[in-house]
Length: 320
Ligand SMILES: Cc1cc2nc3c(=O)[nH]c(=O)nc-3n(C[C@H](O)[C@H](O)[C@H](O)COP(=O)(O)O)c2cc1C
Image 1: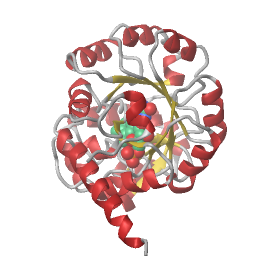
Image 2 (image 1 turned 60 degrees about the vertical axis):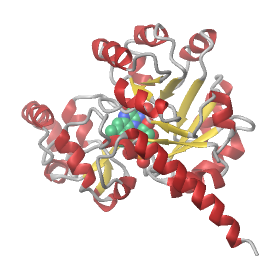
Image 3 (image 1 turned 45 degrees about the vertical axis):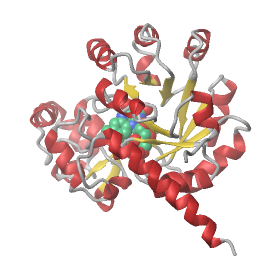
């Protein structure tokens, strides 16, 4: 038995499970592993490092994968879209900013365009701009996001976008989440946190261990990490991470962090390279409670799908 949805049909994939394009985590090996397991892996294009993008696209080999960009960041270095299109990706994924002139370029290349959104207005705009698939991302998500919660946001987006397939994201890391998303009217899920500690993930081993030991209760959204790293994120998006000594120190004193940024930035970047989780952020979402081992990505996909199938089957028993 398989779960066949508008998403699996549109993308010609076996399972309705997409790997989120996580900057610095979802490289070519992880994306290829998810695609080879029947889902679709999407390489994180990150913040415009051309060499690492090229390296990860090559690392995916001949396996069909997608490429994701942070739209406001891509606008600063638009040539990276050509780099990605040059590798004939299976999909292009854009999040965090207006699609603008990227959409016609992607569509002209004949590549399906997935847009990740955080508000209903963004969902409607993305459809108007030509998105083929909408990812509705709730605030539970690891990494950047906004304020809507997945449970009410997904069906509202489904209602707003007509026949366009909707994918649920934010807080989904097992088959219960996939079954729930399908019940909400989504045709698949996009998972980041579920794959953060996977064997193929590019995350530092200490950060993976931090995720495996982490709890959803101990995550929070803030802009501390972006100020520390020096990444100029627009204020409408914050980043969900595990709390640590660094976020505890500066979480309520962003102005203080800005005043001390020269010193704190070098401390942060050194800690990131060393995998020091007291300072460097473990970027995961509320679903981190469901991440307890360093499984291979293929096992994660298989587990999510088989659990969802079992849940959907047993849901029949509720009907009398
Ligand atoms: C470590 C990490 C890095 C992320 N980086 C990106 C990114 O570069 N671009 C992007 O569009 N989304 C990024 N996201 C957000 C994902 O696209 C997705 O919305 C999120 O992971 C879904 O929620 P979940 O983490 O609960 O599965 C990132 C998420 C995580 C956990």
